[in-house]
Length: 130
Image (cartoon, rainbow, N blue to C red; front, side, top):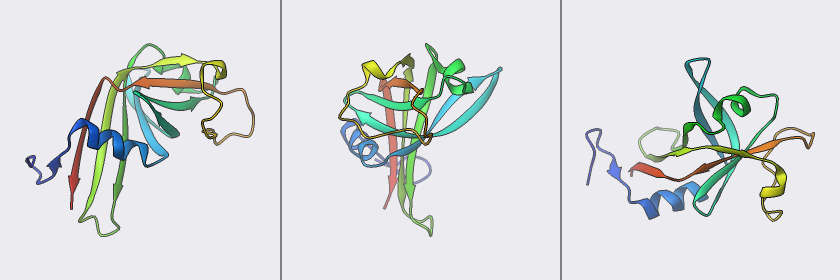
């Protein structure tokens, strides 16, 4: 099925597969009453997306226990083909003790005081253009 822009509408399993294939995405959240976007390194882990949220960041202070969106995409340089996946979920904050040690490093920072933002994949949608 195609959407009104001519993109193929993806099933949940296709979205999760694409989500697992990259490691940089964007968290969309509300900061001081306005939309905000934060690029993050992430991992798709089961039915959630995990990313770092330094304790001093706007993301850390605004996104805990709030509904957020997460977006990842991959488009060809000519912009004629590609895909995007969007996740919606009520985020929660946690320390490193709740994150499996087998996961790769997700922080761009050299200090280890980061907290993690966990976004459950409650709603997921995706589109692809070949």
